[in-house]
Length: 109
Image (cartoon, rainbow, N blue to C red; front, side, top):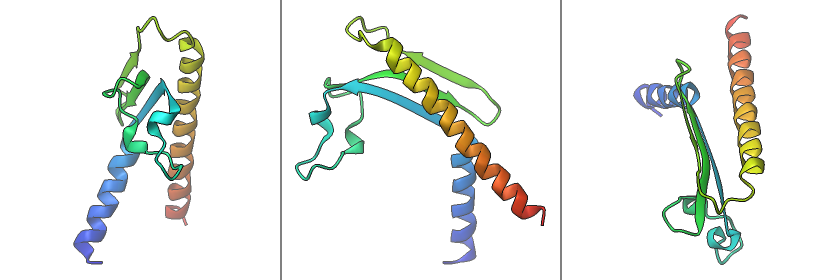
């Protein structure tokens, strides 16, 4: 790996740490399972009509935040989904904080 590639990979990882996006979907699970029984993560898009975006949150490095909550009356379990969504955001933020603390600990030595 060249120095240019290494710097590019490092820059990409910093960008990935600098913003957080959490998406919560609901729908029919068989629509996103492949024939081999694996989850087809690329199928988690609200364009097929079978999987519905219930909530989305984007938090940028400067703490600008964009939130979305579905207004679909068919989502009878929206409260539970929003609770799950909030827990996912908190977990992702804690994970990123742990990584930053680990790196800062390495740099301090």
